[in-house]
Image 1 (cartoon, rainbow, N blue to C red):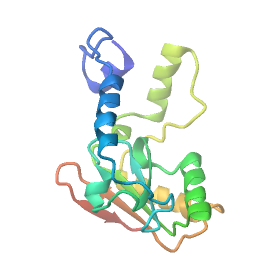
Image 2 (image 1 turned 135 degrees about the vertical axis):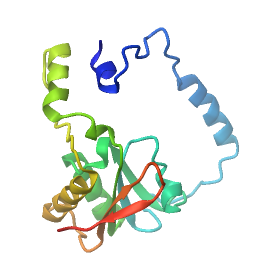
Image 3 (image 1 turned 30 degrees about the vertical axis):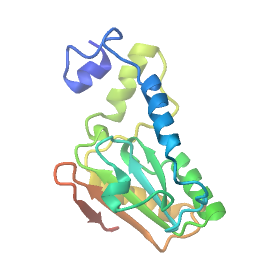
Image 4 (image 1 turned 90 degrees about the vertical axis):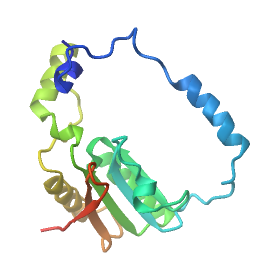
Amino acid sequence: MSYHAALCGKADAMTDDDFQPNADRFVANNEAWAASFEHRGLPASPGRNVAIVACMDSRMPVFPILGLDRGDAHIIRNAGGVVTDDVIRSLTLSQRALGTREIILMHHTDCGLQKVTEDGFNAGLMEELGVRPSWSVEAFVDPYADTRQSMKRLEYSPFILHKDHIRGFVYDVTTGRLDEVFAE
């Protein structure tokens, strides 16, 4: 059984024969999008001067959750929405080159990073590939505690210019509501 199958609790995980690639459909969808494209001329600097760090989970449509339109915000997504060195790199560029002044963190309930452990995930990769990754998985148990940790990482970073407006939230994937997380 593959590591993915074991993680998901599925002995019958999708095989290569079952998988249907999506790129051709995406290209066709893009043709339809481009034919009626109405967003020419939007500036690279977000209109609301905000950068949002969110989990990559497909159940989190950031724009409708927050009532945003195209051009309103920079959206930075990764597994867990955790603040990593690369997130700090992106936020530093967002603030210093493109004028953002506010940072919103969005973790969520039922996150995949709550279902793995750093050691277990790395052991699975080591067993399969013979090498451990150079990066941290950033697994966590409590999305509220991890949001607080991410807020602290931003506060401690010398690269983050504007720290007065950093707020964290946990999105509930069963209710669609945001729950604010306050720094300790």
